[in-house]
Image (cartoon, rainbow, N blue to C red; front, side, top):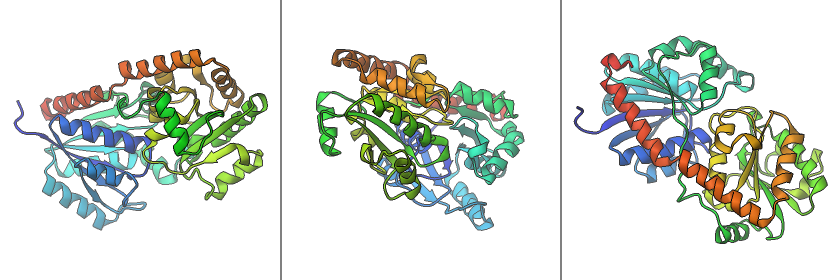
Length: 382
């Protein structure tokens, strides 16, 4: 039986607005309440989520790494670990997973846990990430646990050589107190973001990145707009703003300037979801997309491409093949054609799905149980 709290050094590539970063923030808060002491090592610098980690009581250290880590950065990481004396070194995403294993070889008493947060699509990754992903297959055998947030991602990484022996699948969790919808929330969100009450609004929250396949989203919206009056596409996230010339080129090429509202980064995003009548995600790859669970928790019906855990989150009927703009458009049109009574019923069903399958408190309990099992296993091995 352990005495005292579990001490974890968690490393992540950055603290910008993203699904993995948001999942780590929520996990940090939940596991603190369950007796875990955590130190966050940000491999980058700053990030829009850093203040939220710190306001939650987490200590954050920046390594300021850009590209390949320098000897100075590695030395500083070792010093941080020596001072913190972690029971577990936990990586979040490829770069951090590799560094976690390297650090674990120096601090042999600490167990190493990896987190894989996306499905596998190396063609859209930078050369360094592609190289690290493939070369880390051997390193994966030295991890005491590898956590995937979807069964699909676990199978994809197994096929390229990641160790199946230490696989754990823990889906993301959602806070249904923070993310909630209703008449009052919808009215407040529409007013805050200057959206008229009579327009049907399709929402999308992500970032400007090839993985998100905004081209398919725009192509689907062109089809929706051709058959449905008074519809607006509202997008939010890093790089999804009129300040991004590449983004605006895609909008203008389809004649959508007057029908697309680009808000850029919005914090907290929980204030935006209730403004939507439908939500669309057209990614080429995902792990376990937080935005789908958050939308459902706010009573917003979703349409998505069949990647990562999208099918697990929203169900079979609303999932379409990657790049299927016609299918996505048809799914959105079906939602917009519903009566108010049908929308209300589906909103209740979606929220109930999140509450029953993806509780944020259950997420925290499952991670703590994993940490305890790793620490109690001989030599840290299951």
